[in-house]
Image 1 (cartoon, helix red, strand yellow):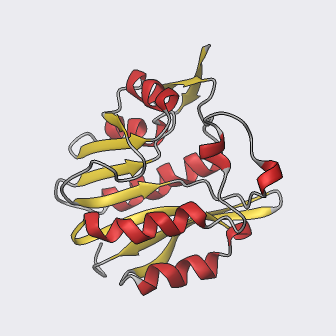
Image 2 (cartoon, one colour):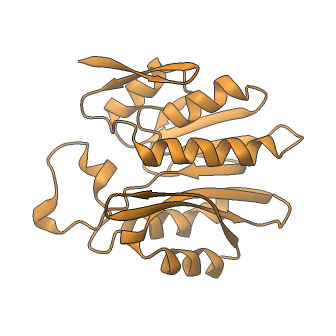
Length: 202
């Protein structure tokens, strides 16, 4: 069953077995819009784990001059994102991708998840961050630098449940300059978007 969600200026289709946009999705949209607005050139923008496609879809409509592409491991998410106009391919993280990107966006599964807390089906990929919440984040950071263009950057959603300082340290260990681009207080946690960049001006 497909339903619709209204975001300012956009109608986003959502579907069963696909992560429904929430505070972390909107926080990433706001952060990405600010970063992209600061650029005076066309950017190549990649979103990993696009889900419904809301982040890329909103950016494409509001700032259409850039080049956008997205991936997701879930076939349901890929179908949903395509209905929202996002150029998306089914891939596990960066698998099968070539080239480099000026900006990589990722709202990862960041919830610490014990084995008995896993859920059946594709939604587990949207929630399950492993025992410490950093399992997928660490794998992403291990691969991301190989796909960054000179001076490029990443925007990564992280929760206080995941130990934000440890994620910052991991980002710096791969040569990124890190700052907090956006944050919001939610019940039981703080969500932040970390901006890791290869250039101090991006």
